Every structure is written in C-alpha cells, then in structure tokens.
Image (cartoon, rainbow, N blue to C red; front, side, top):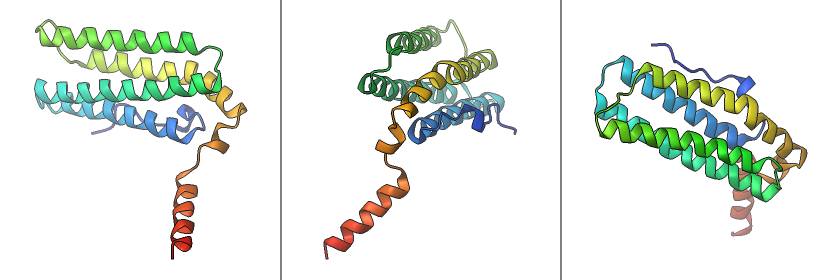
Length: 157
C-alpha cells in the first residue's frame, strides 16, 4: 500500500532534531492510515491515534522550549496553534470514548493538512529564526556525538 503522507525535503526546516520528529509524526499518520485501510479494528486505530497524540505533545514541548530559550518573538502565537490542535485531538478522543465518533479517513486528511500547513507556515518561520541564531552549531549532530564518544574512549585508557 502506498503511504498517505510522503516526507519531502520541502518539509525540512534544516534543524535535524525537529526534522526527525516531524518524520516520526508523518510515520504515525501513515501507520494510522494503514490500520484504517486494512480494517485492523478500532482498538488498534485508537492505540495509534493515542501514540500520535502523545508524541505530538512531546514534539510541541520541544519546539516551545527552543522558542523560549532562543527568544522567538512569535512564541505565544505558535504555542496557541499547538494548544488548538491538542484541544481538537482531546475532543476527538472523548467523542471516541463516548461512541460518538469513529477514526476515519476524514480525520486523517484533517491531520495531514494541519501538519503540512503548520510545518510549511509557522514552523518554517521559527526554523529560519533558529538557524539565523546558529542553533545547528550548538546542537551536535549524531556524527559529532559519536566522534566525541570515541575520544572519551581514547582518554579513558
């Protein structure tokens, strides 16, 4: 089955950790799409939706922490966008629990559209701001971390 949401470089902010977290969100949306398409049942779909909601909260916390640390001027508006989506997901989870709603392709398309618009709009703005302040220079890449560990081994002999 073809993925519902394919990651593209256009979605990248140039900040490795944030881009990796966005890829996880895309993957979870694709997992939910597969579960619905394969008729795996509401319990499995709900489990994936719950993982997606929890990972989204963690991701938003990371973004918002960086915004505070780096003094991002539009932090409050961005946080409000995050809060609005979390509120919508919590509302959906409550409706699912009450049997008033079902996880559907319509929900998936809403989440995909929201994530795409958010990344290409609001996130690109803070991404440019972060990069202008040299965040990548202060955020070690995986290769730098591996190299540092090798040097620790050398010195511990």
